[in-house]
Figure 1 (tube, helix red, strand yellow):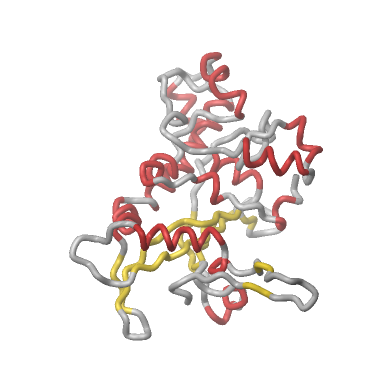
Figure 2: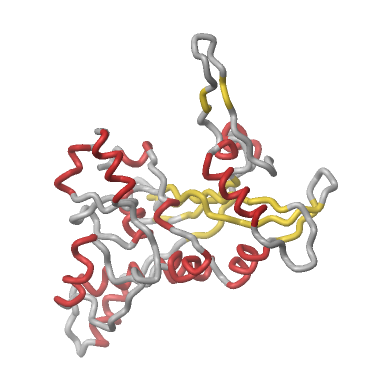
Length: 282
């Protein structure tokens, strides 16, 4: 378990300068910057313990349990990025923790909606909206006040080397397939701007991998801020909402990560890392 990140360099014999090695999260620029930012911040009042960034890496994937039937589970897993990927991938190390199992709205919910609307089913738009809200309400339960307290002030833990340290949990990555990334990022599935990390329009997707594309990814990267959290109290399927959100493929959902962590400087779009295992679905 790496308490302090470091930069790994390689000096090839045919080069006159070192090359940065990319491989582990604890040697990444993101970890180095987060660690330095934590060390530069004011310590918790009256605490002189060494401060450590506890890197959280989430995975979730709705899973069909049987070949025949509809039995499903939707587990959420978490790893610590402070550990080597070579240890994380070994089941015998028990590095993976089941954090939660997400629920979905039951079929009876349609009957409930029909009853609430005087016997007339309101349509799939409202049901889709309710499913999105239900997912993020479950995440709000996970990102509870205890988590926010630890996020801001850390947790004092006695480590196995006999040194007591204060750990600050931070979410670095969230890996999921594209439909789940759409749900997490509160965007439309294959909408005008299909990427959960930037607002590059669909018509420019064929430019992927070009120099212009790499530049646009930076210029058009999504940023979560208070302006994005604007609420105008319109119904979810009104023309006003469509005009407000369509250009960036957003959907009218109370995003759990935005509501709970935006005030602490967390940009949840950055945690949706590019995952080659899942991106082939597109």
